[in-house]
Image 1: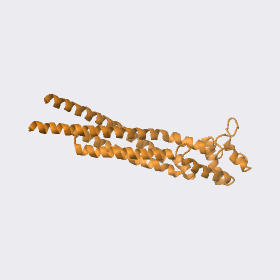
Image 2: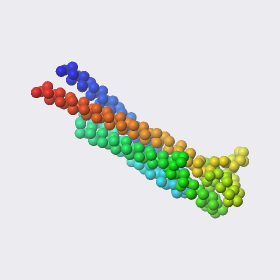
Image 3: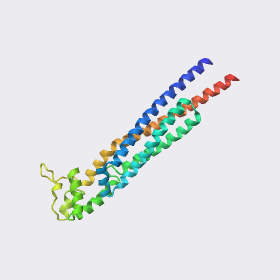
Image 4: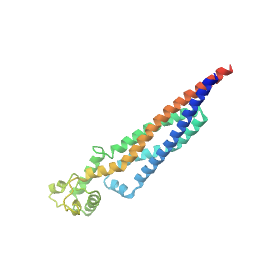
Length: 240
């Protein structure tokens, strides 16, 4: 009987401290996610481009990931305390938060990818906005926006140089490479999408890593709950 109790106690200790370590890693990931998403939201130039191009729906996923990163930072401390205290009620609450965190992280990542990757909802928004700017490129504001984007990103028109040629308009100097003088082949829709995708790839990777940790922590917490209950049952049986 004593040997069985010692073995169970060692197993509980192993699961408990492993869960504690996983919560520390989860806290670090949640902190990194929070820092990156806040930086992305607050970056002045990036924010200005999205506003001009009427593509601010991009920020829906960012807001969701900011919220879940804050929640997961707080929940990680709950996980550490509930594991160390071996409190079954706290562990069940923690399991619920891990399931919630997993679902919201997946939703936030999916929405962010929906507005930052090729063939996503972002491209039609960019296509409409940039096409309107090209068609009115003789106006000072449209010319300013197009020159700003084309010079910084290295692109031409919405879909390519033919956007100007089809409208019988000369190619602006911002459409040409300053070294070779050749026109940029790629349109700004594709180039901006690649630019946004590069900005969000690390954020999505961290969010998915955090979601995976949520699943692992939930499973380990459930194992710990079962082990603690078994230990309590054995103690009660021994007292009888």
